Structure formats: structure tokens, C-alpha cells
Length: 68
Image 1 (cartoon, rainbow, N blue to C red):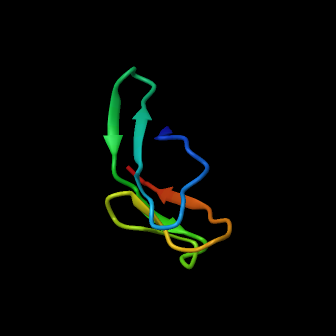
Image 2: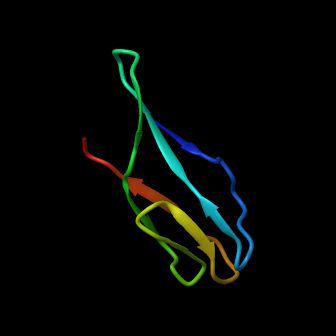
């Protein structure tokens, strides 16, 4: 899987939309929709579509869980 964009900086009030692409062993490629989350919602929030918003100063890890 690959996440796009591969940014590591989002400013406060900035929006960034993330997508995940799955690359399967048979060569097929599919854009998937994981369940998104953040470990620091006071720093960065993320909605169900993968749109991240910078909320406050600090570090946050954005993660996606997918079982397909």
C-alpha cells in the first residue's frame, strides 16, 4: 500500500486530502478507503474521507486501518 501525498507537515487550519492505493500481487491496483484515525486530535483531525486538518501545534500520527 502507498499513501499519497507523503507530506509530513500540515499547518494549523491547512487541509490535506490523503488517499491510499493498494498494489496486489496479481498486479492490480485499487484506491481503497481505510478507517482513518489520529493519535492526537488536538493537533490534527481526520475525517472519514481522509481529509486532514491542522488543529494545533505539535506532532500527530495519522493512520489508516483496512481489512479487505
